[in-house]
Length: 130
Image (cartoon, rainbow, N blue to C red; front, side, top):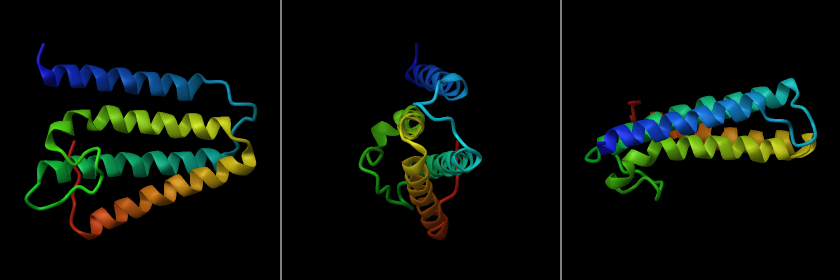
């Protein structure tokens, strides 16, 4: 089995685990309110865009320099999507574990950081590529 198909299978498996966990996991004690769901949704959209921008930057190394040390080496491009899914799942589990008072703050911070990254990437001309 080729390296590419292994990466696709790993990515699909991690995505399935995340979807199942997010859809069916019991909350860490408190259910999510509408604001928390919106904040997490904002984070996920920005995280997905940032991941596609990272992929674009890694595939155009003469035009852009990846700042994230995890993805900086071209050999790690195959792990981009599995790592992005793991990060998204980790943020979800952390937020789910927190009480409402802290959950909103943490989700707002994660979402803001991702939105700033996406904005910066867009500002320097980074496109998106799957």
